[in-house]
Image (cartoon, rainbow, N blue to C red; front, side, top):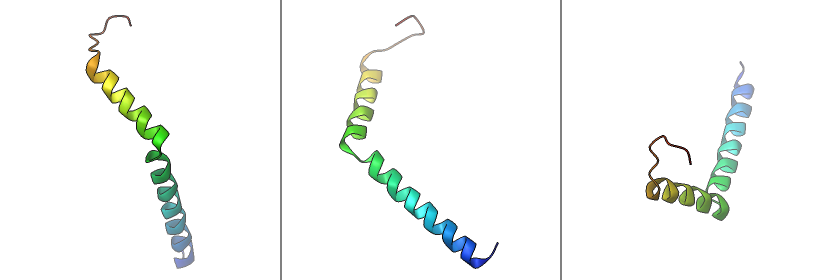
Length: 50
């Protein structure tokens, strides 16, 4: 690949990383992940139903 292709690929990767960071640090996603972790830690499940 040429240098220009590497540059475009690097820019695309950086843009994707910025987008992913924005999504993951949003209030809705942060709250959903926190809720999931709290639920997992407070309700032990030992392979039985729900």
